Length: 128
Image 1: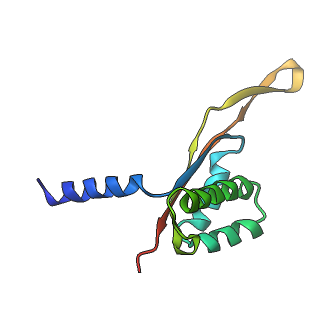
Image 2: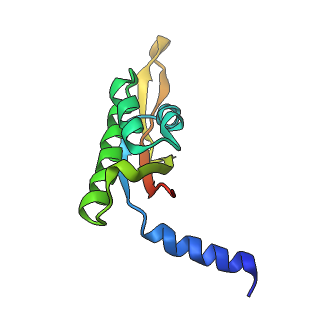
Image 3: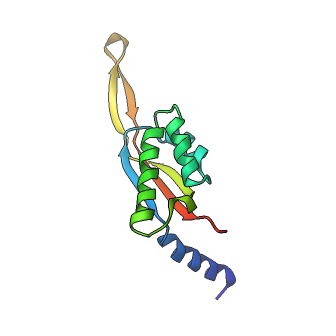
């Protein structure tokens, strides 16, 4: 077997043990969520929580909730210390879109898309 194959297998095994959390069907556009996730990607857990608590964005509240859930999963289920964790991966996928209409002039209707998102945060231990 090739060297890259063995590395991929090892990475897949390690990925299953990393603490993570996801929130689905959050009623906010994934474009807005991704802007906040870009700020915390790669940061330590404590620093990411501090950024999100002081950020004046509508999507920072659900992202903070998911981040704290991932930290609680790390502490309670896997026995990690939150001081040693960092945000390894975080992404927002698009969920189902609610299609509504809004009244326009002359009796017409205009389309309105109410987007939802699925937010995922994966934590990992800092290698010292």
